[in-house]
Image (cartoon, rainbow, N blue to C red):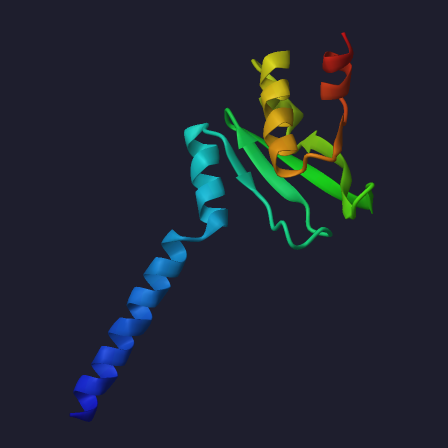
Amino acid sequence: MILRLLIFIALAILVYAVIKYIMNPKRKLELAHERKHFYFYDERKNVRKNFLVTYNGVMFEGEKYLGRTEQAFEVVRISVWSKSNQELKGLAKEDFHFIEQEILSHYPHAEIEWKSPVKELLRT
């Protein structure tokens, strides 16, 4: 009887671990990065933690800055950069505008600032 109970508990722990692994957003980010899809990974409640965006196999990181708006304290500025500049090959201005729109859908009051070399591309 005790052995059956221990086996049941072990199976329940195993099922819980598998579900937790499948639902992990970091795993979804890595999978989207490998498949060259878009994925936005962010802990919205934690302003101090940077967000990650993957798009066409390129990983971007964004740093959020809290500030005051007319109504409340919100994220008002975001700095975005590529984790690897070599992977930017093939991306056009439209791709960066798409990423900006996706970021603005999460943080509508934010002003987005791109770091080099994307900043230079968007200026021209």
